[in-house]
Length: 245
Image (cartoon, rainbow, N blue to C red; front, top):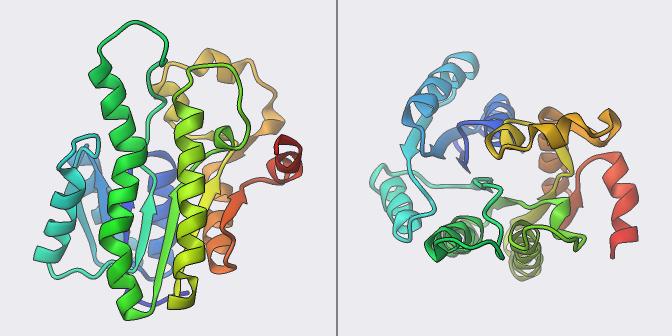
């Protein structure tokens, strides 16, 4: 749905899927609020998309691993007089290994970013959407949340929780004109693996299991409009998903 008066807020917008969401939603005429930690990258992206698509593009530098960040973000958008019609919860990291020795604060920050911030942003932004009778929410999950596996015991379980939250939200608010979808990408070409130090793993994998960010986002935007509560992105992953359940 295109409407120049509507506004999309995208977390993790400075790179990867977040940047692609910003590009595709701007191309559809949505004004933007771009959120991430890196203010310089956000400012550059906002300027680029405003010039290219003639939309209004604002940004808010925010670290959503901080407990007070979601409320502060909501208050800031209210202060600017912005009504958020489209929420993309995309910010995320690979996270620490649950069983390795270390500071538990790192795990708390991970859960705050990957789970609690998403729940709080839904808590803050969905009720006004219901009041206006229109809203779209995409919570970026992962195929890692669809199939248990050995590993760090943090990332997959966090994404499974996001999927469950999204499904119940979708069932709760659909009659109010608000559509919620958990987008579940598989392996995707973004900066995620480089930042997580996983490039050796990526380079050792077959190319056919990797999808471009453009495809993942385009499919995710279409899926939420079709009312898909959970959507594995990529034909390969849609084929495999029933086998994981």
